[in-house]
Length: 573
Image 1 (tube, rainbow, N blue to C red):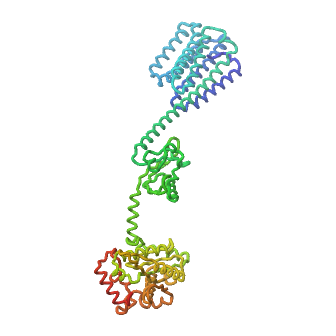
Image 2: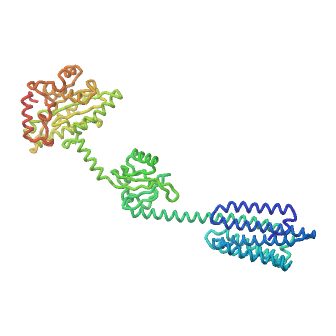
Image 3: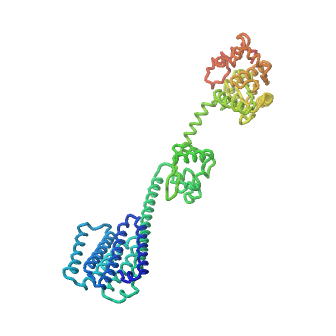
């Protein structure tokens, strides 16, 4: 392929050498792909040696012109052409069968070539044969390359191999023309042929790399598609509702049949839904997102959700983790409906904190919660008040109408109280027919006014016996406040002291425990405040003397005995 014109002028040589540099850089860049690296470097070495052989031929002509001995130089030139043939043949073999022949095969062919060269150079010198070998070796090399490139061009993404096959075929034709001695291949303008060939081979190398990368990309895409298909199959066959949503915009990508049913999703319009739309509690969703940002995975997280078709929220147990899916970072979420479990939990919680008859809070919850409220009020320097009230003549109601009507009275008393007070007020059934109320941000005077309005509302209430007889009832109310104490037990006892005073002063009235009453109350010892013979107050001995409903689990006979004791000690409370 080489033209002697390349070596006759420095400009031609420089341009051709530059094109070889471009080919080297292209080989260096394309050779980073492991699959094609070896074949490209072998081909580059073959072309470079063939270029050097052309330089040797030009040198031989100069020596011959000066009358020097050229046999050794010719032998070395033909060895270089043989080496170029071997390297290009190895490159072609690598392309053709993705492997290189064994060393024994390569050595056998090389030794045979050396023998032929030696025979026609030293043993039986033949100038015509030497000139023919100068074309036969390159012709054989490019023909083999043409075959190899064409064999590889049939696969997907093989434009670079097809281009290389066409180029190698054209070079083979050019060398064949030189071999038959046509003037078109030996003209003075043939110097640019190596330059063009090297540049075009460089382009071919880059195209081969691009094809190899495209094949790798396609293979990766196929693997991703298979991976995604496996994920979709797992999701569809899962017994749990599963949703995949993009992290970037929260849009739902995939929802299996169970998720579609659970969330009321239209499967034909799935991408219009966002996962956040189903959260009934924004703080609940924010907490989930914070956990995911920190840990990338959340297990057994309780969330409250609602569907587009219903405003009734329900509870789900969610497990979610961040994964890669179809070139997106997504959230893989699995759900389990735990509404029935939460309902049972709420029922148990209510049973632990609520009175079963009136559904008001019980004594334990009241004391715990009021302790917290008092601490918060002290921190903000806010006032508060406590009301203690008791149904008047409740035993008479039970004795006259029966305990069933007595229970109705307690239930109605609780209902009236809840309607009359604020949502933030804490109301509890303290025991029997006694109730206690905590009023946050209410002074003693305001608490007295609230108690008066409550007393009037209760006095206006009425229930009916089984015989449809109207039963009216009243309450006596005692009021204590933050002016007295910041201890919940003391507040309850002082409010009860005021309640007892209201009972003594005629019932159906409100009494305020003032700061003036506090000193005398402390001197009496708070608990042991009255002598047994002097109207002992039942609030300090509730377990034995309190008037209570049958629902409190106290036997009727015991209750009646205790009530008799109270009536004997009190003046008609």
